[in-house]
Image (cartoon, rainbow, N blue to C red; front, side, top):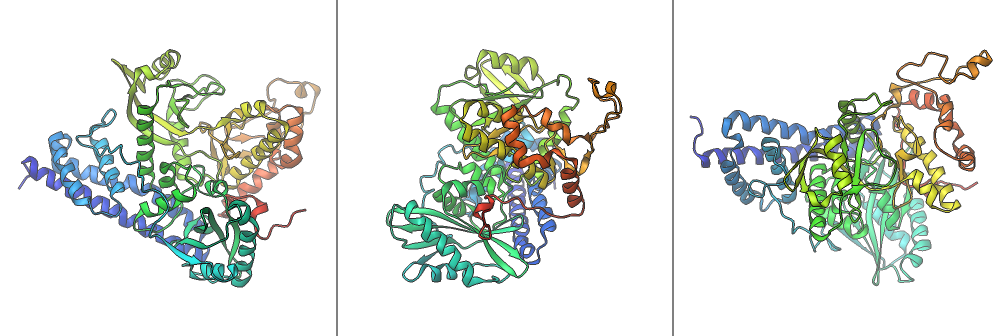
Length: 578
């Protein structure tokens, strides 16, 4: 018998959405739990497949329930009266869920698929802007306490022994001793000479790539510092690879330029609360993103934006740096993010299309970002007050992105845009800083190109203006319209000119295919001055050779997984300085 009454339709719809969310949650945890087995068996390539499968899971489940609702509810699938009742029923059912915040976001995802709502509609969406969560501080049942009432080495040995790892340590006592030595060396300065009283260690292991991480904190008196122990599965068993004790170091491990962790927790907010206590400057949105809860991370980011708009009066304006040929990029000076809108048309020499750009951003979302690619969050149907935009910016948006941006009365509507963390463009950074910071940035610029190559990414356009410097001083890449896989490129040696005429030609005298890349030419287009070139070449001359890229290409084609560690070589326990 067909459903007819609003109540019956709402009851069916609510059950369908709630069941879909519970299915998503179950599958998410099932994939996450595989990480332990992958680490045990050193199945690194399979781990990459799992990470990609989990990223696509949300979209797949949302599409399934959207299709089900359209089929069963017919023309009333977009009836607000039905959805208002659905929201009330759903809210009552999920009230005791341990992941209620994720359940609310899931519901919102369905409504936005069916309604294409401009802005938000609190009648059919969960819009709780009071969730600033004063309880997101220290104190969470997710961790275990270790009192330091005996030697620190013995305590660390207990921490390592208790870790739920599928493989034994190759040298448990030795790793415990080395870890304790680092803590005893660095803790006095970090804690202002407070004695170490206890360690608080999260019970779940954080897996990512070829590594596993024990995450915790050290307490003594009024002092507290993070404790993250990075682990590798070596030839003879598990080994401690690095010990990280500062907020900055741990923040980089959980960076928005890194892929998400596989960590199995029943109540995500417990893990978020704990992480917030050791890296408090990192936005909640980024913490959720770091654990793989991408949609809710987007929700938190949007809530941060709306809350900030309510507390500020400055205007959206063009961001610092050179004007983009593909994107209009703007920012709110008091908000630490940038907004990107695709232009209607791309000026020469750009030959890519809008679909190419969308596909490039999707590639970055699905791929291992290796600590060098900003994760951009994609939004649809957002709306803002027109008075928040400078006249110049609003004119450019409406004239050059009219397919995406419209103005109705005093509101500006965006059909589509990306939001990502703001960084300082590298070309500006080099002009603004002293010789030492400039040198460090240039060396890290070269390292970022190397790291991208190790993750099978060729940036395409490697000009300085397409890279930026984070608040932690790391150089990252953020212009994706020419980005592609290393394995899709043809890295060629530069042909030798056979005559003076060929040597002096302003255009290539040899055939250049669509995917042909000549690394020997890179140095001429980077935009580095003579001194900066010398700094770059002193350590990264290899990047300017086709052999470097062909080597990475072969290793990727051979299915080798190349790890890019979220900490420098000098932090590794086996590192020996020259």
